[in-house]
Image (cartoon, rainbow, N blue to C red; front, side, top):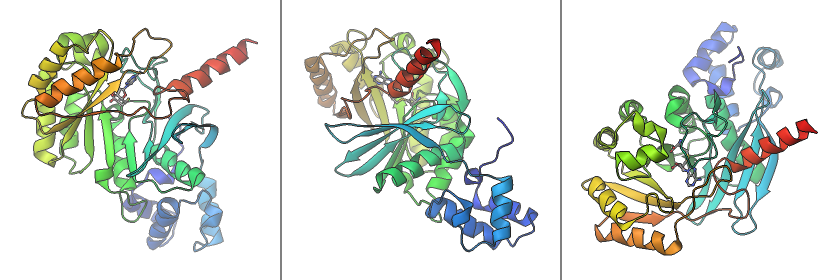
Length: 352
Ligand code: SAH
């Protein structure tokens, strides 16, 4: 990436260093941090307790670019909002705001595109363009907060991208978002979803964070998993499960396993038996997701009855299961589809 440095990606200690280099007193850094992360202003001009000279210096050397919402779709069914944000280099990312009884949730992207290649996923179709910076992950939340005017109590890193493929930025993002001196979200209210980059799960276990880790499992054995997710060729389910056990041992946090049900692929009663055997002894929760049809892919959703049967079977084994409620069914449904349809339209426009 370019030399551009967004001050919102820095820890307060780093900001102190930077402010000192500008010949200012270090306590100015705390004030700047407070404006950026607690008050979430988008312009140095609003930082009224800084001298005009410092504000101008910051604006000159570290301009604040605020991502712009180029499209917002609101579901008539449940109020879910999908945002398409344009980044400073013109790329677009997608974020979702969902209203739940227990509080509002925001689903953010961690990369522009994705290189994991999961067969049923729309986000990976064009490959990976670039990683998001911590400031751009925070920006999605700050902007949605501003645009909706509503409180945000949960954040899920389940949008486009593989968060553990952008590890350093992810950790910074979490620490800054949960800093009491900033936005101050509780770590317990953050969920990070991964396709299962095992070495990074081991690393994450050592960060002393109390976030929830969700694993995109989607299959009960290696053979089936390889058909759906290329990452399964790199790490076996056995290695993945060892990583999960380690994560629980180190953090005490119960894991979530995501299982997208694909008609005829992974939704049989035998698959449920095998899955139950695999999860035996894990302190976990299973989230079943009826696969969202993606127009570029030919997977079909499992029958409603099949989903229920799958759930019942797991419950018989004493496993904690939920079926993910489909939010915003009437707006570009599956993950990454709003961005894809935007990019498709752009391509069509260019051809004209
Ligand atoms: N890269 C991360 C987060 C991205 S997606 C991960 O793999 O976990 C969040 C979840 O949605 C993942 O479980 C992903 O496998 C699932 N998903 C992606 N496309 C889907 C689709 N079309 N239908 C159902 N689930 C899908």
